[in-house]
Image (cartoon, rainbow, N blue to C red; front, side, top):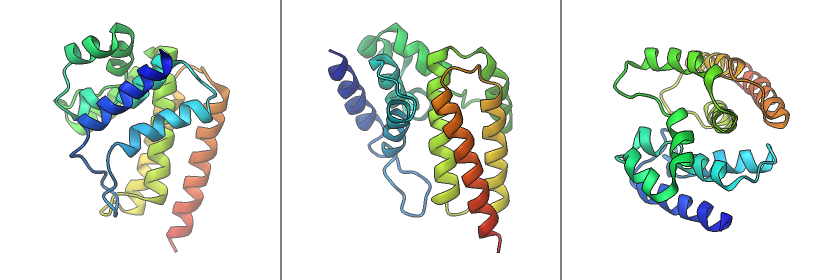
Length: 182
């Protein structure tokens, strides 16, 4: 059953994100991001909880698609809906307000949501440093790393593997960005 749940979540997310692209130079398919987040949780974090992995695959569906909470709950249950909601930004708010709320809200996250948040920030830091949106300057990329670090600093500790990997990813990202400065 657990493999079926994860595969159903992967298919659902792929269907919901099918017309979306990342903002990198190659305009990669968006679905690559949620798959990376779930893979980081599983491989780096050594987590095999099917609901957490399914929620990781679905983590951007409420925020970035027309998926409704009712639809997520109907297809995946209240626990997965709750995890996805915890890591969903309110897109009605201005960007800077959303970013501040993520920092503030981090300390209130459940352990499952922290796993998703950690892996999401790891994947995003990797992308911002190695395959950034084409219009992002080095300064903007560094600011993203600072902000991501502030979000994760406010999260309760839940998985030392992911926490150490996040710190390593930030450190490597800063080195890459510093070397790109010239």
